[in-house]
Length: 150
Image (cartoon, rainbow, N blue to C red; front, side, top):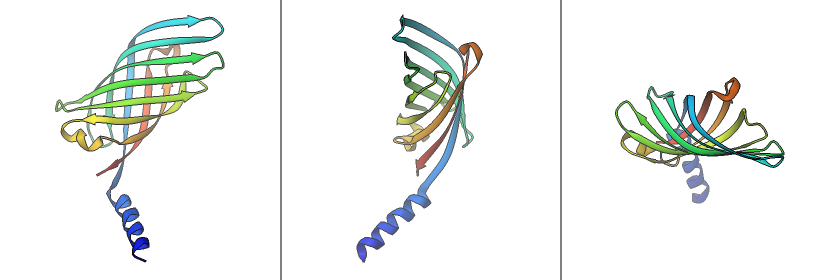
């Protein structure tokens, strides 16, 4: 009986102390290096500076370095490492992962791996994100829904 009560208490605590929040990221310019192996794959290394805002009222810049691999079978693999800075000069670091059938849009995961100031509480938070590219791939829009444990 105590075991069941303990489990219920843990579940209730998770509900009471978790917080959903969202983040939007808008990119317009990037430095891209492309290597193509005909009929096999296209590999892109990039650096991009973006702007972000979240549903908690914060905003700032996001500097990312990463890779896109587009395989012949139309499979896209993204690995992206980012450093975010808000207007108070507090920082967070995150990793973005995505595997999809389409380069121009898809769904992936963001994980906050480090932070200082108010972002310490973000460490370990995971987000599900969707991304869309502008025509000619000159910019992206990312919208993510995250879960924070307070």
